[in-house]
Length: 80
Image (tube, one colour):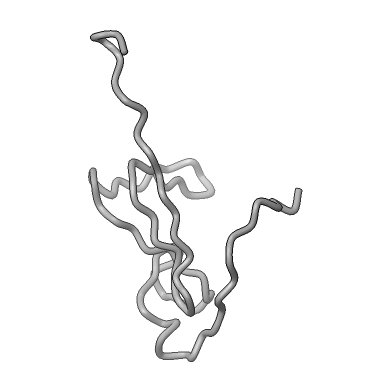
């Protein structure tokens, strides 16, 4: 690797059983008006999957209070 090149950062998205998407790595959240939400570097983010969060797109734990159940496993089929 050349001296001026940085290693490519990896983003990992984990599908939590009966819970949110857990996102690790350098990501940027952008709203529908293209405003960037600054989350700070190196934090793990939890994104709502149940649709009940009052802090969408982020998880507020509503999945546990509402009994959300989903245990899908990611596949290579993107559906597109």
